[in-house]
Image 1 (cartoon, rainbow, N blue to C red):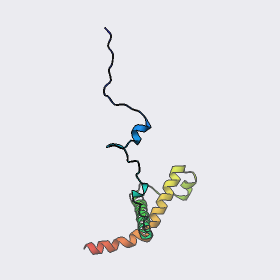
Image 2 (image 1 turned 180 degrees about the horizontal axis):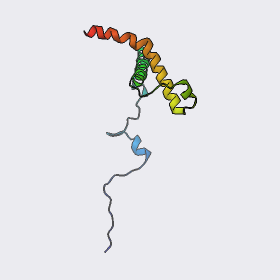
Image 3 (image 1 turned 90 degrees about the vertical axis):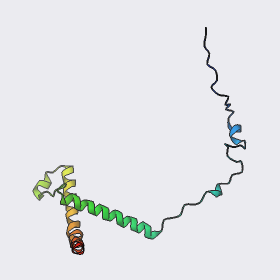
Length: 116
């Protein structure tokens, strides 16, 4: 007794002609591409605002890394013999200290006074 597999459905794939025929599930033949709305361009003010926010976030991250001692500044003699990651850590800590000294330390007392 031999078993044969029968077709699961009566769907017939005939190629491109089937897709081009007008019908319920096919695209109309005369569809125009102009119906798609154009994307609006971002304004210059919004671009500047986004870049300023990204710069503030990066500066905050550098200050946070330096303040929490995740990255540490090295002594000048230790910097000469340091490996690449240690040097990178040193320079990140230096940048965090610089940003903290000239911005964060001067702005935070204003917020502390306002909270009292």
